[in-house]
Length: 376
Figure 1 (cartoon, rainbow, N blue to C red):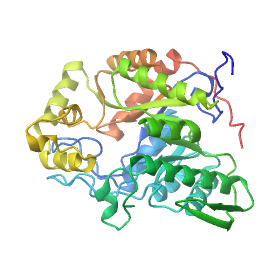
Figure 2 (figure 1 turned 90 degrees about the horizontal axis):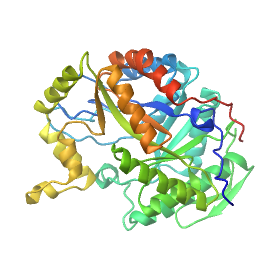
Figure 3 (figure 1 turned 180 degrees about the horizontal axis):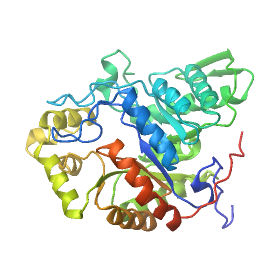
Figure 4 (figure 1 turned 30 degrees about the vertical axis):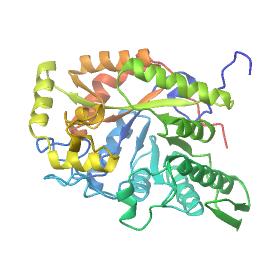
């Protein structure tokens, strides 16, 4: 490979040419990403999500993405009890938008690859080439065992073996007339899937373990990294890109960030404190159980749980638009990640502020000439 790094596959995103991809994590579940009785109400309805998607499209964000969730965290707020189907919702939102990329989520252990190939090809047609797929290998046993879908005996690394067969089967179905594949987990026998996507859908995953990063580096276009500290993200992003380079590929690196605007920084801090006062302990415990964190039961809590007591489920930035610009700019500059997926306590109120006062400054700070997708 020499000293020339692999080039990004172009997808019509700012990161194609050195810019930053900025999108929205869609609130398809009640409660959004704040574990608090005092947070702005988000019902997770299609009507709410349609408004959010149209705002994201209008202000010039690059993508919208949904999670796939099948069991909530409980508590007084019944957090994430009411959820929309990711792909059905995103297909409708593709029709409601015209420019923003539309990425859905599918769990590899729930959907057959031939069914998924057809679903995403349909999303591609509805969106006129804006489709993307967030691949989740499955980690929360209770979410799938409730429907008899947890693959017993398939451990963490084996789930990535399963996912590799799964995505390779999908890619083959997107490009070949007929696919025959006899794997350990999936069998395709003279399997056909038409029509093909007009362009290869964008692929993203959050596999950050060593095995997960190998899978992501070989099969995906981007990786979601955890952590909001710039130094941590820089190291994680560098590691992901280095692993991808060993396979002759370029990897986009993203992270998540919740943004809470205030007329002053102090007002935003007060709002965050109000959320903390309303922490839904039951929902927090439900989330801990889903993630397999039981430390609190033996008298101590790990860093993840301590962070979640802030009621924010992701790293967050609080303050005026000016403060948000400074902190996001510093984070993107220092971490060298390629983009952020954004969350807001109140999407309808906050997206117009972000679009008018923050986004233009970030585009100027991290310029890019967006190219049309050239891959097939």
